[in-house]
Image (cartoon, rainbow, N blue to C red; front, top):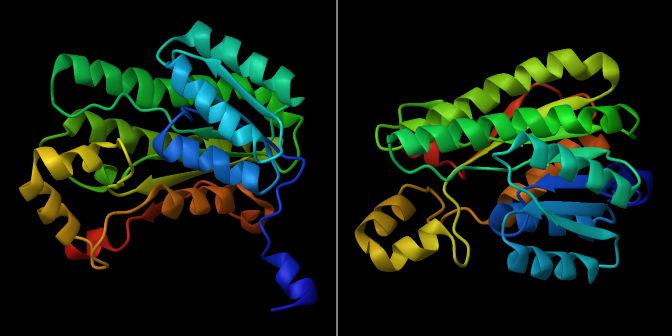
Length: 259
């Protein structure tokens, strides 16, 4: 593919200003790096300062403006302060990726509070805080992160599954409300991801039977990798998906087909 046809499918995001809420490790970090590699300026936030500094330095080495700030994504005031700081550092916001999660793994009161307070409310709050900047942005887009778990029963992780289902529903409501303001809103629902230091990476040693069983549930014989998802996020945030809004894209390597 050459010439104009090839250019139509290039993910050139030079000049775009991207905020990744929850971007110091795992999927968030890979997404931030992918945007930077495509030429975008990027801001990330998280709670851990050491991880943030390392992540920011890595993004900056890609030759773009890189900003990082500590933010408690369970706290409204912290989110509002971070988004304003990120907008000032980048000169505005064109793209928001809501990647925050409370990492709930049970049905306890604490995990329900974490799921609703972070997975759901951080998505709502960051979107509201970023909206004035997105309205002034270029080809503005929000990409929310849900989960394959949201598509069916989750007996062992009901708090997480319910919260991620709420994110999917909120995506539709956001899309309907913001379309006339020129802001597209979509959602990505990944399946299980494996990356160094992540839950499934640790599970390989701590619970090898569960690890092997879950790995075997993928028709391709492997867990998803962060880059499998970050490429889809970039697509949904780019002009290539300019006529798509209000959708949730399940990116699970066919794991659902084998369920």
